[in-house]
Amino acid sequence: MLVTLKRWAKHLKHQVLTVWVAARDPRTHPAPKLIAAITAAYAFSPIDLIPDFIPILGYIDDLILVPLGIALVIKLIPAALMEEFKQTAIQLEQAPKNYRAAACVVFLWALVTAYLLYYLFNRN
Image (cartoon, rainbow, N blue to C red; front, side):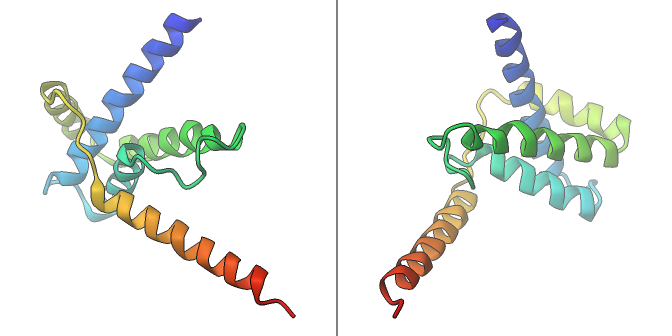
């Protein structure tokens, strides 16, 4: 079972890299490009919407949101173009880091935390 999970994780990483390539290609239509960019940014971001240290919920977002985004992008992009993106992804050795997406997620978490703290300490 562990071998199967490792194989699935490696395949998922390759698919995310393929989606990242699709998001950067000018031949991709705007709607799939936006979905691909969001999916890849979320997958590559070191920060999640739901932190992984929260039991069960922390991993559900990774196990559901990323594969759903990938499936939607694959469905929206023509098969021939997607195959070309897969070949390009194979050539890439290391996954890119998306610091802008990480900064956005950190900013949103900080904003929500600040609001909650303000709300908790300023209730009368």
